[in-house]
Amino acid sequence: MANPYDNKSIEEIKNLIINGIQQKFNNKIKILPKSFIKIFAVVLAGIFIILYKQIGWLFLQVFPTTAYWHEITVLGRKIRPLVEWGKLIGVGEPKRGSQWQGKIKIDVTKINSVLSNGAQLKNDITGKIYLINENKTLENEIETVDVICSESGTAGNLEPGDVLNFVNPLGNVKKKTEVESVLKIAVDDETETEYRYKVVNRWRMQPQGGALADYRIWGTEVNGVLGIYPYKDVSTPSGVFVFVSGIPLMFPRRIPSAALLIAVGKSCTYNPQTGQATRKPLTAIIDPLGNETYLNVKPVSIIVFDVYVYGLKGIPTMDFSLSVKIPIMEYFFSREPFNRGLSDDNNRKDLVTRNNILSVVDQVAISLKAEFDDVDMQESGNITPSYGLGMGELCELGDLYINGVKY
Image (cartoon, rainbow, N blue to C red; front, side):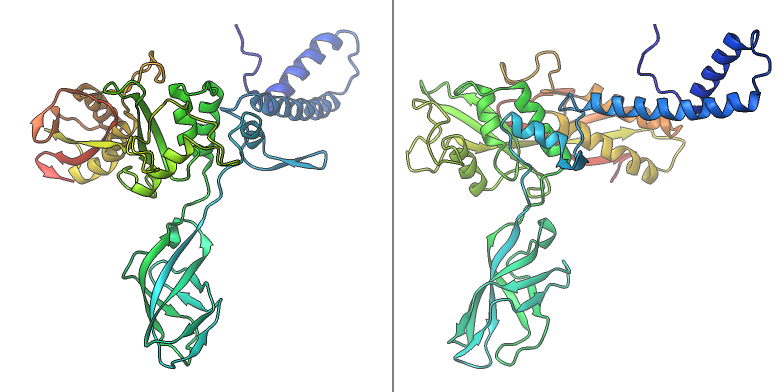
């Protein structure tokens, strides 16, 4: 049976129109010029294609998985279809990025002078401009001053010890300064992939007043959170464990900071819009000490696997490593613990197997017309045919060895 939405080109539609007209009229109206028929068919085909593509595009907006991300203008109104879905089901708008903030240590050359708000500095590594964020009276030979990046996003993040130089020389301070402490880590604007993931998950898992899915919804509202894995604490009647993974751009191994864990605990307890405790049930315990330390909100643990490829032939090992490493990393990244009632029973991802790795390597080898003998997966130096991820466990690729060489 033909699919009514199969793509057809203008040329295909034009030929269908020409054939239809010729079959219908040629026996009766033989004087109809063939050139006119072709021009008429091309015009009609163009109209049909425009309507077809418009209707097809509108059909995609019905579903959060395919709704358009960018802004469009319809009858004078600017909308973003995917964001409209997000606002409709309670996800809200995509989170905006934030600016890095910190304190710098400066050497003062003129005591009792003033360093004005807005004075510019630059870091040679990031290439970003940073601004003095206060009017500071310089009373000592060494002062600390608040500074903020002029742009939002993780590209402006600095660490203690990094150097900032004043763009324009000032008469009361030395040009070179040093970052003393970080007040706020910058985050990027929420990406289309991250936002669509949240919208689709909220669509599938509507809040139920403290179900497992609710903790995932509440936790992923916090900037910097990648995944939430809630569990019942079997040691206490009302205890709940919430394991958190962080966005790799901010937390390279997905292990979140203590500040992010506290933010997740607060998000699971208080509505960020009103500050009211309208979220987790009163009896559910994620803050056993009752002092907002949220000891039951924990970082995920990362299980590291090394992969060994033996007997590679037909391609240089360096070239093969460049092609196979990312697919293997993506396989490990996609694994997550199974949580009954929250995970998909028909698509479990908690089992990490050597056979799956073998399949990934085999697909790459076929595409490169290469051959290999075998693949091993090791965890902590032990050959591991399979590993089941437990509570709050994720995994990653450690070292990749090809024909005994580490890549």
